[in-house]
Amino acid sequence: MFIKLTKEQQHLMIADIQDFFSREKGEDLTEFAAERVLDFFKESLAPHFYNVAVLDAKHVLEQQFSSIEEEILTLERPIKK
Image (tube, rainbow, N blue to C red; front, side):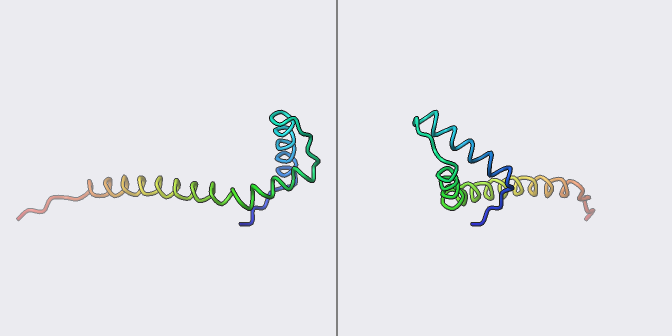
């Protein structure tokens, strides 16, 4: 999956990764190493998050369409027999 980040987004994420490793593991990561970690997340984990987001959006749209359908049906007029 190809994820295009701006340079600013990438730098912020790399800094966050370096900060996380420093706080949680007591390790200082070079910018290159942090970029490799970011690449791993983008290539291996991001598709999982993306797919969950797609399913969430699908669920929201299904609810909205259902609501619209109910609203449209309230416009029906009785037919005299």
